[in-house]
Image 1 (cartoon, rainbow, N blue to C red):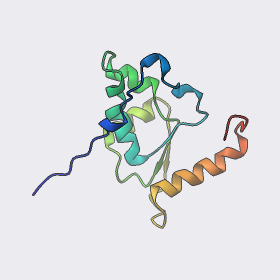
Image 2 (image 1 turned 90 degrees about the horizontal axis):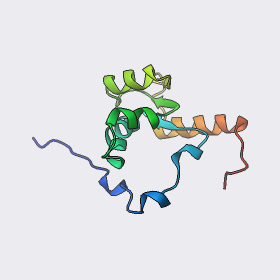
Image 3 (image 1 turned 60 degrees about the vertical axis):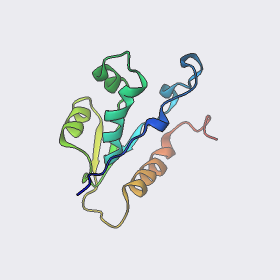
Image 4 (image 1 turned 90 degrees about the vertical axis):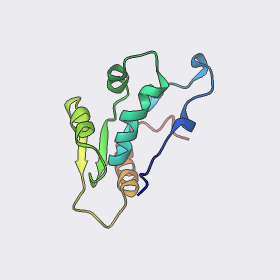
Length: 118
C-alpha cells in the first residue's frame, strides 16, 4: 500500500525578502483543523535560518476551526498553549471545514475594520 504524501514547497516565496508582503497586516489569522498542521509543519520552511519554534510562535493562528478530525494532537496542544481559540464543530458534519471557516469570517467581519478590504 502506498502512503499519501503532500508538499507545499510551491508556496515558498521566490521574491526577495525585502519585497515580501507582511503577514502581520491581517486582522484575523484563521486555520481549518488540517490547515493548522500545514502551518505548523511548513511555515518554518520560509525561514530556514531561524529556529522553527520561534517561527511557529510568531505566525500562530488566532482561531482554529473545524471538526477536529485532521489536526494532530501535538499541533492542537501547541497552538492552544499559545492562546489560539479552538472552535470544535465536530457535531456539525453537514458542512466542510472550509465552509465553517468562511462562516466564521463572515460572522467576525461585522466587527472588523473594513477600510483595507478590497
